[in-house]
Image (cartoon, rainbow, N blue to C red):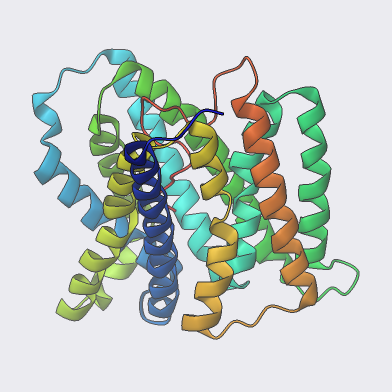
Length: 303
């Protein structure tokens, strides 16, 4: 039996800790964002976060020094527009449905990519995910806000597109340069969409809160995930990221006081199981894995 060296074990533990810390940062940032929507609205919070993230990334990365092909710029622009739409839709969903439910529904985006790219046997995980969605939304009771569900599903579609565009950008660009272009594009798009309605409600406290939110997501999580990918196999990383809906339920309970019912807990569990199974199937398929080990972490979306 082959032994695992202490160095390898320590590296894996470090990578796991980084991935877990990244997911916690994202969900803490989302919970904090939800608490600010009463003052700025969901669109205003999304804009504030993206605007600060764009400023931080531009200062740190100085993308004007990099060489971009025309194709690379087009990809980054599309990635930015998708990021803006995904962020606005998800924030709008979180004011209508619990954070855990919204996160689980949005996770159907990367799960769909994993299932489509996986082996045929792995596509049975789509049925597991569908059962999870049914348990989460309980359409037979009619108690879940249908608009919130549709908004979260729209964010899921955006996340799927984000994954595909991130991988394409990773093939054309190196390091964090794609993010340093796409996030400013996203910030510009949200400024056009919601900025004028928000400017009058800003004060120094809100601006400082926006800077903190931008660090919580996507700046710190993205950096942690990038370092985690260098220490973990793609399948392990994808499995860990599949736990994010469960972390969202925990954060929603602790910070927002959102207590899931039995159906919600069962639904989250099914979506998480489908995420783990679908990601492992995709990683073992002849297609490119959902989470490439040599480019940006494509499951990490600046929601």
